[in-house]
Image 1 (cartoon, rainbow, N blue to C red):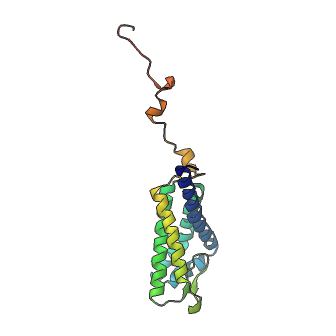
Image 2: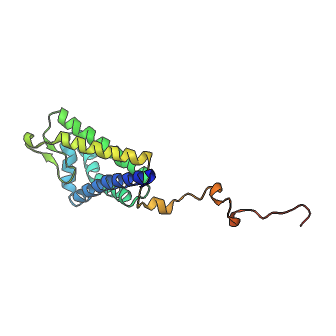
Image 3: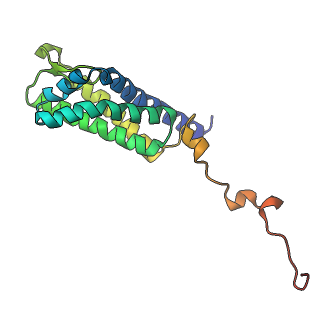
Length: 178
């Protein structure tokens, strides 16, 4: 297997991991807007009106970005948004942990207050950091296997690739032949 093919395979894995997690998270929250809002409110970072707006919009953004990544469309931009979401999630979880809050992150459904022994902040941060790195990989190298980007946005052949093809050369005209 060539080096380029291995890198494309890594891109596919990164796309499916980040996109799949975002898609699953969004789908699990979109049908429960009250729970989604509750999850954002539990972090105690925003006033209720802003937390409500975030709680309602976040699942839609997660679904849209997740779908784009899974199908490999607008990969660089989707990965940038997905990676930034992961960094924001890490900051929120770290903030809750540092302030001594005992909450479920609400990453995959309804979050909120839980028993302190049930918190999993470190595991959540490690998971989100790995997903942020997957997003970074795709920002730097968006090319991957089985991506719609490859089909829709192929680069035209370079001039050197068509040098011997008579369909891509101008006809010879000698002086005085017209």
